[in-house]
Length: 390
Image (tube, rainbow, N blue to C red; front, top):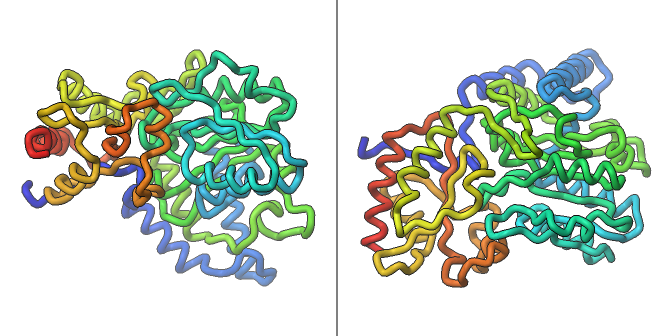
């Protein structure tokens, strides 16, 4: 048990199952050709690609043409923002105050092109404030882009309600669902959105492949008008990686549970992951040295984040806890891996209106199927040592 490697960072990336790896290897052996080639072998690969695309569409209860293969969520987000800029004169884009770095970067690029970026204010749990909807749903708003499940603090946004308002106001709606899909499958039409981004490596698939879900309205905007591309409905350039796509399909098939909605709140089916998260919450909730960040009620099922105080009630820097846990073969993180080397305080934590001395102290655990109660007990024992040690 002493030397067991314990991984609590599935929000960063998730391990491949042997089943997914076997599918990737089989596709590499049998369908390694270029799907755009017009000879028999190329056509064979193209038929397989469209078969997999159709099977993925069935999983989401969508049309096959709704599925656009990309390299992952960051590219999908970049495509959405860039194509919007290509097709409309600069007006307004609305994002939340707690978006992922990929959305912030894409927004900043458009800001330099003359677009006005409006940040939707969040409360101290990181959930968008619904009191002043009139500030965001205005005629000049062309796109609203919202992260469904926040990677640092786990809070869930009311994306179905936002989508309904977008439809009523004829505003394009994009959802960053990168952290969601490992927790269950959703039906595409339930979401009321036009565009949605996914990365396979977050739900047990390979790195370098993802999906941009679209509809007829959004595809007409995304489609390249300068040249008729042969790939991905003229939306995305580059030869498709059929082995990675096949691996992603298998990873999607391995996901259990259906995501539903109740009064616009996201509802996940009870499972082992939720049990593990709630078990840890119960261990920590009465600890006066622990301050949970984000929402408890509207939270990613596989996610828990908090700030740990030392015995003098001063926040412990996250890197100290991460390094201590790593020395004990436990992997945790402080939040988004894409910005973990940034020397500045977390923008997300800043928007929660936390005290300045806590902005470098958030730690995050995110769980997977291989995690266990025994592992959480070991983590908890070591965490109590941190209170005394630091």
